[in-house]
Length: 208
Image 1 (spheres, rainbow, N blue to C red):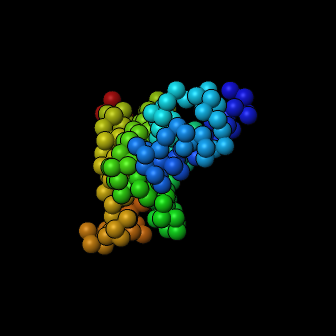
Image 2: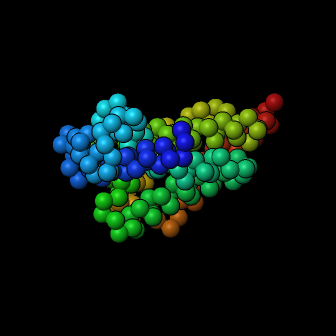
Image 3: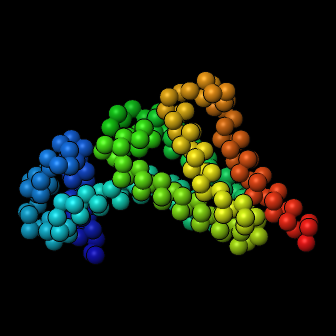
């Protein structure tokens, strides 16, 4: 796809997203998207077969946006332990930055509040992408001999459950209500996960 074609496609997705948010998916038509983007229907059908395909592309892009900072960490040249520390720190920062922003229409805010009616697919896709990235990072650590293989296999599910709780506590500002110090929780989660990955590996090595 040429740069011009890519820009046109992104323009169509931007417009479609805005219309989906303001009017709802069901009430948005291909004509609406064509008119709002200053493109003809023929141009739209060059890129997308129908509205469902546009909607699927918008969902995919929104999910990618949510996890883009995490993907950058996973693709960095850091060692396994430092990469995991950065990954968890970035995950906390995503929530903090979003809730601290003044944008009431933020897709990320909708994501962490579990708006099932409008953004269930985005949430599910983002969760899956995040879990895959976390798993890839652990696999690399195992392959390089830094992480315990058995613990690494079980951690993606545990990680996801931890952050469902973190997201809701941060959103509701209820850390203290459940006995958690918000200034320490990032470090505590990081050390808990690393201690399991590393101590089990060391124990395994010592028994060989």
